[in-house]
Length: 383
Ligand code: COS
Image (cartoon, rainbow, N blue to C red; front, top):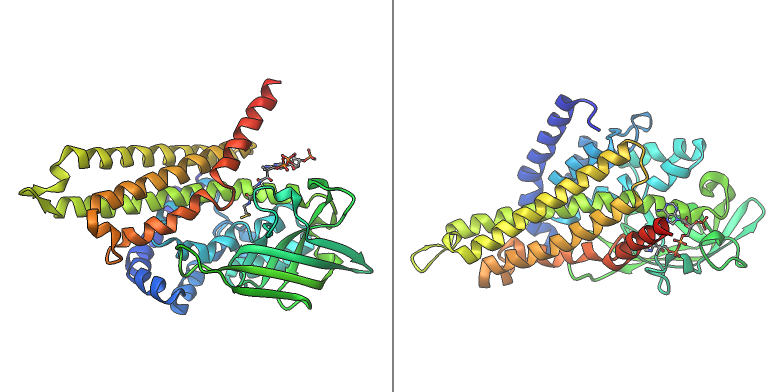
């Protein structure tokens, strides 16, 4: 749903300009230093990017899902690390509180997330629990007006920067699956919380992940999301439904950027006496990529509109994530191919993007988990 086309167009034009003039020129620096320059983070704050998806009542821009994916298409034309900087505050690091938090929890944390004063992170994955998220073993034991958390979370995006973590932990050891899990807001600086060293990833330098350890970490009982035990897994799944749709938009925008670069290269690069864009085998790669990006864009917009209409989009979000992330991988591969040898050396952005986008098929649910979610729902409705 688009609330006011004119206001949205101004926002989209502003983001487009910001991407072209500020983010793209800093991409190599971010890759070299593994850090987003502070000036860029400050500009992102000023533009309101940390609070795109948070309601105006909490200081955010209050974008609808359709508006948000349109912004995501634009933002994703720069290195994924920039989007990741603001990604958790708008998505997995805030939505648990927004969707299921108490009014007090929302009031306390959302304005600080929306302004970018603090960074939010989402701690679900563990060393022994990835795709099988309901098997997590981090425990939360009630002790008076606190819970005591013990366990380790793994690959936690923005953990080194985070001021608060949404942590899924088992409050009922007697329930092995999803029903024993609760969600907590845990502040950095809580006694017993520590963050491990930054992971050395294949790509996405400038976006950090790390382990988060809880050693008898004391968390006020008031930080139990929604004030209810046993519903934390469902909170996490609702957060991921939305997150998967957002990531699908990011896959689409990033694929568009890679294709734009490859097209420019194909038009400039001459072989056998003519631009390589004149060769039909290169044209096939360009055309297939354009077609698949269009398909992903259409899917993402449709699912976003349905979510704005109040529909349950669990299956559509998984369809989008599956198609858009796999599509993005195919486009990355073709775009390296169009660049030829130049695509394999780091002078061209495509070498970096090829590594960056590999993560899209893995995080916020692997392609295989999306297939499972889609097929299970189909079978359920048939039986
Ligand atoms: N929205 C709301 N509730 C949901 C839900 C959703 N999208 N998906 C599942 N649930 C609920 C179910 O209804 C069920 O509740 P009840 O027991 O009350 O009926 C509960 O959650 C457990 O669901 P399910 O039985 O489907 O759980 P499974 O253990 O079979 O696993 C998958 C579900 C595999 C889909 C889940 O573990 C998953 O998404 N794994 C991937 C995790 C992931 O994406 N990690 C990425 C890192 S986090 S960035």
